[in-house]
Image (cartoon, rainbow over all chains, first blue to last red; front, side):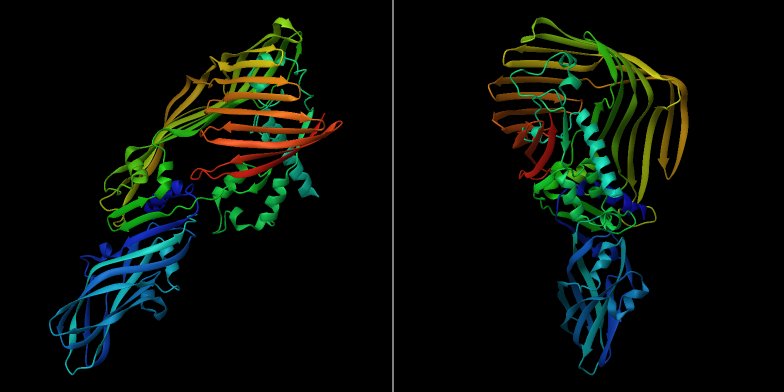
Length: 180
Length: 443
């Protein structure tokens, strides 16, 4: 915790005299999940519909005190590495203040539209969008939990299975810069 | 009513104290961008010769008393009608704004802001990753000082005494404060040049702080050594025996050391600091030292020139000083280093130079004042037309910014009402705001 305070002290001391404007935090979420296993979300969709999700993951942030978060946009890349079956796979991103909270429907921050997958092809997809207003204030805190969930449809008769492998994920958090 | 009384007391107390230091409580001075054409302001304070110089016969009388009319406080109370419950002033509130509180205390809203200096817009970008932190302060990065910066100054809050035939014996109070900071190279690069924060690296600030205060029995002389009452050469000098009641000084190096990772791990940042503190508390043996002021003023017809220098050679010896060293790294400890040892401090030399020219109903003047924290220059004038006075001026402040003043006044017998406008700027913009000062003068 003190780490954030020290960083923020150094930044805030200067920002206090910077005039009116926005603090724009670019958070490289991918750097926090790369190599942890959380960057690969297995999906397993029987004929019908089902989904699979990654383990909730903690992101440390500098913290922005009582500042108001104007908006959060996200962009990233994901490879849908299909192993079998044909259908569509999309992603959902959840944000919460604690690990368990990421499973609540209200924690839904972004839904990435489905992309078609089939066979053993790897389908690159782009994650781009704006977070739901109900969760963005969490980004002003010093830590946030997030969870990625793959969600798909399987109109076929065989199992749809594979991994959604993250290649990059970056948040742009725009904050009214009242850091105290 | 009690609130109003308190407010009035606050205004008068602040105005009296500020005026004693040459601060702006007078709309006439505001109208000349801070220039003082009379004997008020800094002339007598910083030039001991001026105690003997009579008011210019060519200049219409100076007021015995100037009372600021605090229209700015009305504006402030209008903007903050319920101050006790205002979140910005409540430390327990999430809306607490210490910058606003500090600014309000340091710059009492005495006068009316008729035009707010536009607040510059400046976006700051912070890039955060598991092992990455980059800060881009935008245009504000230019404000990150590469060299040492801080505030310092010396003042004489009180100077009671009595005199005869040019001599004066008194006891003045003195106060000296000096706070200086300097960013270490790594922190400077991080804030000013947007260099990424590095792992296992120390980011630090060098800190110097000093405050000392006391009183000084003083013998001074001011008199005319040549010429007559219409013009001549005046000299003045004062010898002070400084007695220090207390002082504290700290010189330190404070910062933090990053760990193997910027934002992860159990202990990514470790505070790290050390300081050497020296102090002599009130009640210890008094500090002592000699110093002096000198000055001269030359008056010839419509021209008046003066130079004054204060606290020459003012080194204070503190015979009973305690010295401690303190260190912090994960946990703190303080280690007494020396006690009852002799240390020395030095008061900064202050100086003023002024020129005034009066002809007919016109008075022009310029002054330069340095109290140890940088020079301030004022240039301005006043034109009287019957009951009306018109004023204008230009100033260069300690940040080397140019500001302008203009205004006017009306005098009805023993009472005068003056209005002055003075521009001001903030750090990131050249666009000026305008303050309107109003004051009542009793002649």
